[in-house]
Image 1: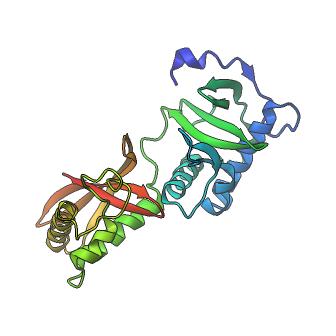
Image 2: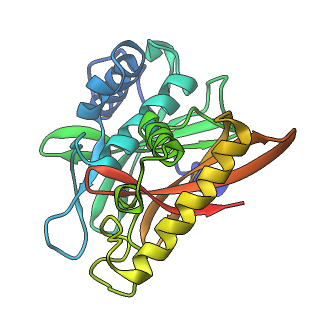
Length: 271
Protein backbone atom coordinates (compact mmCIF):
# COMPACT_ATOMS: atom_id res chain seq x y z
CA UNK A 1 0.00 0.00 0.00
CA UNK A 2 1.41 3.38 -1.05
CA UNK A 3 0.96 6.96 0.30
CA UNK A 4 -2.05 7.72 -1.91
CA UNK A 5 -3.85 4.75 -0.41
CA UNK A 6 -2.70 5.57 3.11
CA UNK A 7 -4.66 8.81 2.86
CA UNK A 8 -7.84 6.73 3.16
CA UNK A 9 -7.07 6.04 6.80
CA UNK A 10 -8.81 8.97 8.43
CA UNK A 11 -10.52 7.21 11.35
CA UNK A 12 -8.19 6.80 14.35
CA UNK A 13 -9.04 3.91 16.62
CA UNK A 14 -9.08 4.24 20.36
CA UNK A 15 -5.95 2.85 22.02
CA UNK A 16 -5.77 -0.92 21.67
CA UNK A 17 -6.52 -1.35 25.36
CA UNK A 18 -9.95 0.32 24.99
CA UNK A 19 -12.80 -2.27 24.89
CA UNK A 20 -15.53 -0.09 23.35
CA UNK A 21 -16.38 0.49 19.68
CA UNK A 22 -16.64 -1.94 16.77
CA UNK A 23 -13.17 -1.13 15.44
CA UNK A 24 -11.58 -1.97 18.78
CA UNK A 25 -12.63 -5.60 18.39
CA UNK A 26 -10.09 -5.77 15.56
CA UNK A 27 -7.51 -3.88 17.61
CA UNK A 28 -8.09 -6.23 20.54
CA UNK A 29 -7.58 -9.27 18.29
CA UNK A 30 -4.34 -7.74 17.07
CA UNK A 31 -3.13 -7.04 20.61
CA UNK A 32 -3.80 -10.63 21.67
CA UNK A 33 -2.03 -11.91 18.56
CA UNK A 34 1.10 -9.85 19.24
CA UNK A 35 1.17 -10.83 22.92
CA UNK A 36 0.88 -14.50 21.93
CA UNK A 37 3.67 -14.08 19.35
CA UNK A 38 6.04 -13.03 22.15
CA UNK A 39 4.75 -15.27 24.91
CA UNK A 40 3.67 -18.53 23.28
CA UNK A 41 4.87 -18.52 19.66
CA UNK A 42 3.18 -20.50 16.92
CA UNK A 43 1.53 -22.85 19.39
CA UNK A 44 -0.94 -20.05 20.10
CA UNK A 45 -0.79 -17.61 17.19
CA UNK A 46 -2.34 -20.11 14.76
CA UNK A 47 -5.64 -19.31 16.49
CA UNK A 48 -5.39 -15.66 15.39
CA UNK A 49 -4.37 -16.13 11.72
CA UNK A 50 -6.52 -16.89 8.69
CA UNK A 51 -5.35 -19.45 6.14
CA UNK A 52 -6.85 -20.34 2.75
CA UNK A 53 -9.08 -23.40 2.97
CA UNK A 54 -9.82 -25.42 -0.16
CA UNK A 55 -13.55 -26.13 -0.46
CA UNK A 56 -13.80 -27.30 -4.05
CA UNK A 57 -15.01 -23.91 -5.24
CA UNK A 58 -13.30 -21.50 -7.61
CA UNK A 59 -11.20 -19.98 -4.85
CA UNK A 60 -10.29 -20.91 -1.27
CA UNK A 61 -12.11 -19.39 1.68
CA UNK A 62 -10.53 -18.02 4.85
CA UNK A 63 -10.46 -20.31 7.87
CA UNK A 64 -8.49 -21.41 10.92
CA UNK A 65 -4.98 -22.59 10.03
CA UNK A 66 -4.24 -26.31 10.10
CA UNK A 67 -0.68 -26.64 11.41
CA UNK A 68 -0.38 -30.11 9.90
CA UNK A 69 -0.37 -28.52 6.43
CA UNK A 70 3.02 -27.17 5.36
CA UNK A 71 1.60 -24.06 3.67
CA UNK A 72 -0.39 -23.13 6.78
CA UNK A 73 2.48 -23.91 9.15
CA UNK A 74 4.94 -21.71 7.26
CA UNK A 75 2.39 -18.90 7.04
CA UNK A 76 1.84 -18.91 10.80
CA UNK A 77 5.58 -19.07 11.49
CA UNK A 78 6.32 -16.19 9.13
CA UNK A 79 3.62 -13.84 10.43
CA UNK A 80 4.46 -14.69 14.04
CA UNK A 81 8.14 -13.91 13.56
CA UNK A 82 7.37 -10.67 11.72
CA UNK A 83 4.99 -9.48 14.45
CA UNK A 84 7.56 -10.23 17.16
CA UNK A 85 10.16 -8.13 15.30
CA UNK A 86 7.85 -5.20 14.55
CA UNK A 87 5.91 -4.78 17.79
CA UNK A 88 6.54 -4.71 21.53
CA UNK A 89 5.06 -7.55 23.54
CA UNK A 90 2.29 -5.33 24.94
CA UNK A 91 1.25 -2.91 22.16
CA UNK A 92 -1.42 -1.17 24.27
CA UNK A 93 0.03 2.33 23.83
CA UNK A 94 -0.17 2.30 20.04
CA UNK A 95 -2.91 4.21 18.23
CA UNK A 96 -3.58 2.69 14.82
CA UNK A 97 -5.95 4.08 12.22
CA UNK A 98 -8.85 1.91 11.16
CA UNK A 99 -10.60 1.37 7.84
CA UNK A 100 -12.72 -1.25 6.08
CA UNK A 101 -12.04 -2.22 2.49
CA UNK A 102 -14.02 -4.41 0.11
CA UNK A 103 -11.85 -6.50 -2.20
CA UNK A 104 -13.38 -9.14 -4.44
CA UNK A 105 -15.63 -11.28 -2.27
CA UNK A 106 -13.82 -10.26 0.92
CA UNK A 107 -14.29 -7.52 3.49
CA UNK A 108 -11.06 -6.54 5.19
CA UNK A 109 -10.69 -4.68 8.46
CA UNK A 110 -7.44 -2.72 8.38
CA UNK A 111 -5.25 -1.28 11.12
CA UNK A 112 -2.56 1.16 10.04
CA UNK A 113 0.33 1.68 12.48
CA UNK A 114 2.44 4.74 11.69
CA UNK A 115 3.82 5.46 15.17
CA UNK A 116 6.26 2.59 15.64
CA UNK A 117 10.06 2.69 15.59
CA UNK A 118 10.59 -0.50 13.59
CA UNK A 119 8.96 0.62 10.31
CA UNK A 120 7.56 3.64 8.49
CA UNK A 121 4.19 1.94 8.73
CA UNK A 122 2.63 -1.48 9.25
CA UNK A 123 -0.76 -2.42 7.83
CA UNK A 124 -2.50 -5.32 9.57
CA UNK A 125 -5.44 -6.81 7.66
CA UNK A 126 -8.16 -8.89 9.31
CA UNK A 127 -11.23 -10.80 8.15
CA UNK A 128 -14.30 -11.73 10.15
CA UNK A 129 -14.38 -15.53 10.05
CA UNK A 130 -17.48 -16.90 11.77
CA UNK A 131 -17.55 -14.00 14.22
CA UNK A 132 -13.80 -14.02 14.97
CA UNK A 133 -11.35 -11.51 13.52
CA UNK A 134 -8.37 -13.36 12.03
CA UNK A 135 -5.19 -11.79 10.66
CA UNK A 136 -4.72 -12.20 6.91
CA UNK A 137 -1.53 -10.21 6.35
CA UNK A 138 1.07 -7.79 7.71
CA UNK A 139 2.22 -5.34 5.06
CA UNK A 140 5.18 -3.10 5.88
CA UNK A 141 7.03 -0.15 4.42
CA UNK A 142 10.49 0.80 5.66
CA UNK A 143 10.57 -2.17 8.00
CA UNK A 144 13.34 -4.68 8.70
CA UNK A 145 15.05 -5.94 5.59
CA UNK A 146 14.89 -9.52 6.81
CA UNK A 147 13.17 -11.59 9.44
CA UNK A 148 14.27 -15.07 10.48
CA UNK A 149 13.20 -17.72 7.96
CA UNK A 150 10.33 -19.94 9.10
CA UNK A 151 11.63 -22.92 11.12
CA UNK A 152 9.76 -25.35 8.89
CA UNK A 153 11.66 -24.16 5.81
CA UNK A 154 14.99 -24.38 7.65
CA UNK A 155 14.13 -27.90 8.81
CA UNK A 156 13.25 -28.90 5.24
CA UNK A 157 16.66 -27.69 4.06
CA UNK A 158 18.51 -29.44 6.87
CA UNK A 159 16.69 -32.72 6.21
CA UNK A 160 17.54 -32.42 2.53
CA UNK A 161 21.24 -31.81 3.20
CA UNK A 162 21.47 -34.62 5.75
CA UNK A 163 19.83 -37.06 3.36
CA UNK A 164 22.15 -36.07 0.50
CA UNK A 165 25.21 -36.42 2.74
CA UNK A 166 24.46 -40.06 3.55
CA UNK A 167 25.97 -42.67 1.24
CA UNK A 168 23.02 -44.92 2.03
CA UNK A 169 20.50 -42.47 0.56
CA UNK A 170 19.21 -43.81 -2.74
CA UNK A 171 17.53 -41.86 -5.50
CA UNK A 172 14.29 -43.55 -4.49
CA UNK A 173 14.64 -42.33 -0.91
CA UNK A 174 15.78 -38.85 -1.89
CA UNK A 175 12.80 -38.41 -4.21
CA UNK A 176 10.57 -38.05 -1.15
CA UNK A 177 12.16 -34.61 -0.60
CA UNK A 178 11.63 -33.42 -4.19
CA UNK A 179 8.50 -32.09 -5.86
CA UNK A 180 7.38 -33.68 -9.12
CA UNK A 181 8.61 -31.84 -12.21
CA UNK A 182 6.76 -33.66 -14.93
CA UNK A 183 4.54 -33.39 -17.99
CA UNK A 184 1.65 -34.94 -16.05
CA UNK A 185 -0.59 -31.95 -15.14
CA UNK A 186 -2.18 -33.85 -12.25
CA UNK A 187 1.19 -34.50 -10.62
CA UNK A 188 3.34 -31.54 -11.59
CA UNK A 189 4.10 -29.42 -8.50
CA UNK A 190 1.41 -31.36 -6.58
CA UNK A 191 3.20 -34.52 -5.38
CA UNK A 192 6.61 -35.91 -4.41
CA UNK A 193 8.73 -36.99 -7.37
CA UNK A 194 8.28 -40.55 -8.57
CA UNK A 195 11.72 -41.95 -9.53
CA UNK A 196 10.08 -44.68 -11.62
CA UNK A 197 9.10 -41.94 -14.09
CA UNK A 198 12.16 -40.97 -16.16
CA UNK A 199 11.24 -37.29 -16.52
CA UNK A 200 10.79 -36.96 -12.74
CA UNK A 201 13.83 -39.05 -11.85
CA UNK A 202 16.16 -36.79 -13.87
CA UNK A 203 15.86 -33.78 -11.52
CA UNK A 204 16.08 -35.98 -8.42
CA UNK A 205 19.38 -37.43 -9.62
CA UNK A 206 20.68 -34.00 -10.56
CA UNK A 207 19.72 -32.44 -7.21
CA UNK A 208 21.23 -35.32 -5.22
CA UNK A 209 24.52 -35.13 -7.13
CA UNK A 210 24.74 -31.33 -6.84
CA UNK A 211 24.06 -31.26 -3.11
CA UNK A 212 26.54 -34.08 -2.45
CA UNK A 213 29.26 -32.11 -4.22
CA UNK A 214 28.46 -29.03 -2.14
CA UNK A 215 28.38 -30.92 1.15
CA UNK A 216 31.58 -32.85 0.43
CA UNK A 217 33.45 -29.74 -0.68
CA UNK A 218 32.36 -27.73 2.35
CA UNK A 219 32.67 -30.64 4.82
CA UNK A 220 29.03 -29.99 5.69
CA UNK A 221 29.68 -26.35 6.60
CA UNK A 222 26.88 -24.07 5.39
CA UNK A 223 25.13 -20.89 6.46
CA UNK A 224 21.71 -19.49 5.59
CA UNK A 225 22.13 -15.84 4.64
CA UNK A 226 18.76 -14.94 3.17
CA UNK A 227 15.12 -15.88 2.77
CA UNK A 228 12.36 -14.69 0.48
CA UNK A 229 8.94 -15.66 -0.80
CA UNK A 230 8.13 -15.86 -4.50
CA UNK A 231 4.55 -16.08 -5.73
CA UNK A 232 4.29 -18.16 -8.89
CA UNK A 233 1.54 -20.02 -10.70
CA UNK A 234 2.56 -23.23 -8.88
CA UNK A 235 2.01 -21.60 -5.49
CA UNK A 236 4.07 -19.82 -2.84
CA UNK A 237 7.76 -20.68 -3.08
CA UNK A 238 9.96 -20.37 -0.01
CA UNK A 239 13.53 -19.66 -1.03
CA UNK A 240 16.56 -20.02 1.23
CA UNK A 241 19.84 -18.50 0.09
CA UNK A 242 22.65 -20.69 1.42
CA UNK A 243 26.41 -20.15 1.54
CA UNK A 244 28.80 -23.11 1.43
CA UNK A 245 32.46 -22.62 2.34
CA UNK A 246 34.02 -24.77 -0.38
CA UNK A 247 37.81 -24.83 -0.78
CA UNK A 248 38.16 -21.29 0.62
CA UNK A 249 35.59 -20.06 -1.88
CA UNK A 250 32.07 -19.04 -0.89
CA UNK A 251 29.61 -20.91 -3.07
CA UNK A 252 26.04 -19.65 -2.88
CA UNK A 253 22.96 -21.57 -3.88
CA UNK A 254 19.25 -20.79 -3.59
CA UNK A 255 16.98 -23.67 -2.57
CA UNK A 256 13.31 -23.18 -3.48
CA UNK A 257 10.74 -25.18 -1.51
CA UNK A 258 7.07 -25.59 -2.34
CA UNK A 259 4.46 -26.63 0.26
CA UNK A 260 2.76 -29.84 -0.84
CA UNK A 261 0.39 -31.40 1.67
CA UNK A 262 2.23 -31.83 4.97
CA UNK A 263 5.70 -31.37 3.45
CA UNK A 264 7.96 -28.72 1.99
CA UNK A 265 9.49 -30.18 -1.17
CA UNK A 266 12.51 -28.94 -3.11
CA UNK A 267 11.60 -27.66 -6.56
CA UNK A 268 14.75 -25.93 -7.75
CA UNK A 269 18.38 -25.10 -6.96
CA UNK A 270 19.72 -21.86 -8.44
CA UNK A 271 23.18 -20.44 -8.20
